[in-house]
Length: 185
Length: 185
Image (cartoon, rainbow over all chains, first blue to last red; front, top):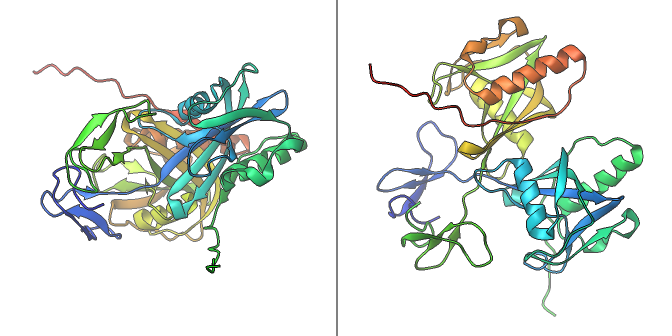
């Protein structure tokens, strides 16, 4: 952030009076611009024991498989976001059940929420951000090609709970991935 | 939002290619500025059956009672936010238990999360955003002076669950408050 989105003047990093963290503060109109984590919301949708996955048509993680999910928008609820993302990414209509997991990804300022859901029909197709969509039984989940660690966390907890016969709420924190030193050559 | 926070040029409302909603797009550098809901995170902290409340020293709802809670910051987890807010607003240290409730407040683009927690000692005091802090038994909760509906939702669900002997996870959506027509005179 370089400029004030309200008046267009340059911003400066400073700790506002009564605050504890440095914020971007406008040098002219004094507006304080706060930056806060974003919610990513998705759905683990089941049809006759199979799970609906989408293969990503966009970066990051182009070509890898994920649950339908995306950034929550203003003016919607968390359930509406889960419904909307499932329509947009998989052209699928679901009944949303309970919130199933919350995954913190603090190094990228995100909180991921996944709801359990049930497809209303075996009808789905690739939305504009998906290359393809498919139903997977637990035994065929492409674990080596899952796009995001939060999705793998959610799927593993889901199958464990389903085997145990009871769905609980799960919470996890993802640390940054270790940096791999790549030597040229 | 009037200006691009990246380059300072005016922004225009338009639907980016492949998107479905109007966004603020920079007229010069084409940066798309997304606006997303914010997370407010708090703690319902218990000490020997009593609940820790804070009386607000700031607007909105100056002088009314609330649970320690506030906006989640970048680079922290949801639990860290609950711990931090309880220290900042009530100078109290808690052990955080399970996530207890999620309340959508879509008309102000917020999602509120409250964790259950236990005070580690009967030590608390007003932080800079509180006029006073106090422990309340269920029978003395100042229901008519609770600052936010999400806090009342959380407290009611908490006491109901406690009486039932089992804490579940609760989710709720708050609609806008009805506008009261005030006739002059």
